[in-house]
Amino acid sequence: MSSRQDLPSKLEEIRNAPQEERAQLDARAREGETVVPAGTGGGSLGAQENLAKGRLKGGLSTMEKSGEERAAEEGIPVDIENKSKTRQRG
Image (cartoon, rainbow, N blue to C red):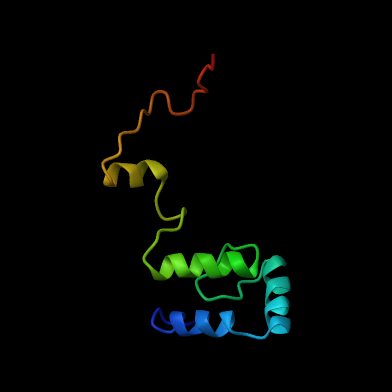
């Protein structure tokens, strides 16, 4: 498994890969294979690259914490009582 320090160089290598190789990687990613380190969960090569880039920057995956937990950490008020109710328009 690649270390976090190797991730930037791996991402750059994948970005600069020949078009034919990128197409092959994309096809494998669309079949559910993780082809980019830290790209787990992405349904295409581009999606895996974006996930890996975000994780490299310290971004959270949605699986790590709920939106409610993240909002609380950032001081964003959440109306728990009404959060799942649909607003009436009109």
